[in-house]
Image 1 (spheres, rainbow, N blue to C red):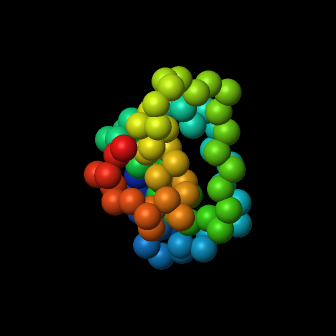
Image 2 (cartoon, rainbow, N blue to C red):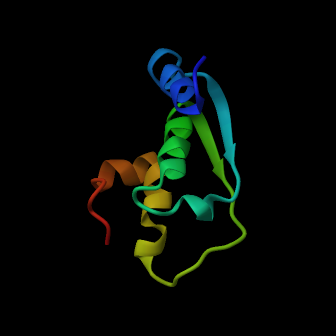
Length: 87
């Protein structure tokens, strides 16, 4: 039996077009660079043609606070910056 990480890996490798739209809630909890939940959410977002990332709480007043959230869910930002190019 596959765990959650195994299911995500299977979808990411073998069925990358699985989701038409991914809806992710409470995304402020995914903002840390090395967050396992954030990395998993990025994997789900990579398997979807559209992503709706929801949050009611944005903390911090700096661009670096939101960098990894935006990086994980914005293909345009991913093309412009590398993973370690936090402003």
